[in-house]
Amino acid sequence: MAEIIVVTSGKGGVGKTTSSASLACGFARRGKKVAVIDFDVGLRNLDLIMGCERRVVYDFVNVIHGEASLKQALIKDKRFENLYVLAASQTRDKDALTKEGVEKVLKELADDGFDIILCDSPAGIEKGAFLAMYYADQAVVVVNPEVSSVRDSDRILGLLSSKTRRAEAGERVKEHLLLTRYSPARVETGEMLSIKDVEDVLGLKTVGVIPESPDVLNASNKGEPVILDMESNAGQAYDDAVARLLGDERPMRFTQMEKKGFFSKIFGG
Amino acid sequence: MSIFDFLKPKKTATASIAKERLRIIVAQERTHRGAPDYLPLLQRELLEVIRKYVSVDGDAVKVEMAKDGDHDVLDISVALPDDRPSAG
Image 1 (spheres, rainbow over the protein chains, first blue to last red):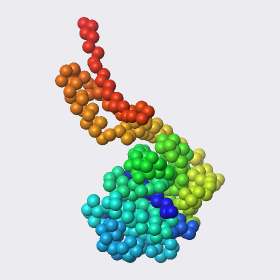
Image 2: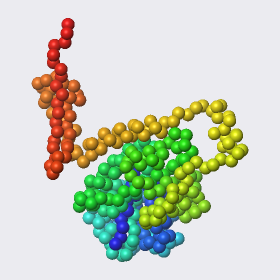
Image 3: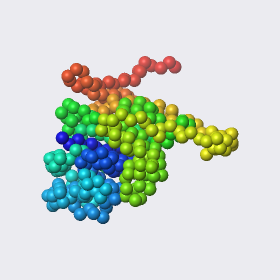
Image 4: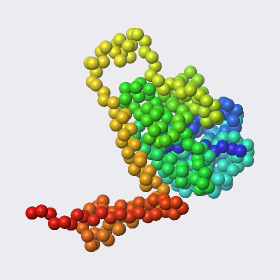
């Protein structure tokens, strides 16, 4: 049985695609057969974060319209042989994705033996975001510790509990909170919402906390998802999130302010 | 923290303000969640009709969808103005 996981947020720019790319690599590194699909029709970017932008020949919409087979459109990752990317189309036609078309592709992936299908949602609450979440079994809601992101996430939670296949069948989509761009030092000084603050407001359990890190931009620059950089705190934090999504228990890391040395205590750091 | 911190402008702890504002707005928005899309329009039209007869404030009409056991209840409340003649 393939597990369908949507990575969503409502607000743009909070790290959906960055997170999708890292989670996909993380699952693949743990031996899962993974497909990651870019639902952001018109604004394709997952390919760039995954580093396969020059190998896109056919896209998601081509498959739905029958212009290419799924096999032709899936881009095999260079690092993991069990990881595939399905790029978004760059068409400006908003109706390019259909519910039936999406269902057909997801079913074919499940029949092909994929363990995990990650759906990278576009921002907003329009059709693309709706289709990305509709068939999901689980949702990773990406949130920045910041008012507009938290509020928009709550809208998304409302949609997950009403506008999905599971909701229509009287079941629940399993929701997880993924906090990104977290800055423990700023939380300590009371300038930033803490993990508990966001959990309290949204009523969600945290599956991962990704610290604010320059490594994330460096990773995007290179087209190598940050989870592959196991030296970096952000990479390790994504790896923890992957482990938790697969049912492992892991203590939260990088959520406390780093202890400063004597010198920086005196002179500031 | 450093002994020179007093030289920096003091920052206020704003996260608690953020949390309080979010708690309120999220709770408010959740009460409207799942309600049909026509509620705001219904509310506006009801207000117009009532205004033909009584002079009421813009927020006098409240339309809410509530759940009562198996069925939905459309809860409409209209606050009429206090029409006791004012002193003087």
